[in-house]
Length: 335
Image 1 (tube, helix red, strand yellow):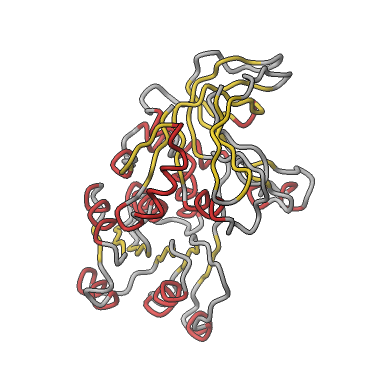
Image 2: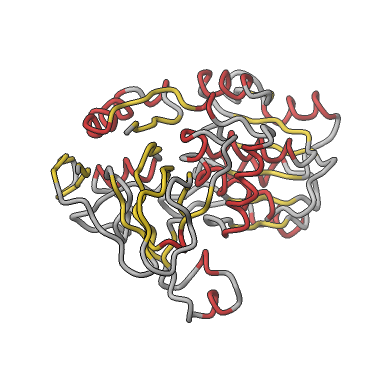
């Protein structure tokens, strides 16, 4: 079988390796689709702070159960996705049920082996069945959608609220769609016209902050500031917008990954009684909710897939993303 292997930054090797066999509690998944995310590109560039080499990537994926080991209840032929977190189960966060922020968290495709191969041997407890109504491509997007589901939960009850999402990339788009599915009124802000067009395609109204004043546009739309903000970029400019423009008593959920420390108006956070909440990854129940959102068509995932590459063209896909950042949303690897 073939697998994609990164021996060092900047190099992807497609190599032939023996097909694995499952041990007790394991399953073999015939991988069908793999989504590429921004963190994968950081690994390829050698700029991911928590990944060493060599590494096998692939954490957004779907496939079919090919073979099962002893004690596995999944059926051969079952369509599945994967929960890629490997946790210790003994640290304080794990003991209280917050394993997604485990003190010793590892993620498949980063600190442990991912699924960028034709057949993947994986702990069967990490596999989640997919209904027939969810396509392989949608199944490979359950993982990023779960990030959005978890982030929206951090804001509490959102039905009837007015929410602004900063950043219209895949995660921001999904956050906006999950908010809408839960009854919120949503605006999404991004300076990239291509991403705003994709947001419009899935029914989310967009604002280009380079072309119109964000604060004034929100007031013109709703007549008052928004109480909910979701920062999905990871920049000082956007977190500052959330803090400066939020309604008093508002909640700001930080979803974007910040590569460096930033300076923000802490005076507003105190004086306006703002709630600032971080959001990392997801729990299994978030993934189950993401699957149901896809099954019920309350969230549209496939319009976000802008390009597809064959498995043998894995590195070509990375280079394409690098060279076409402004015209790429989600790239899918097909097997």
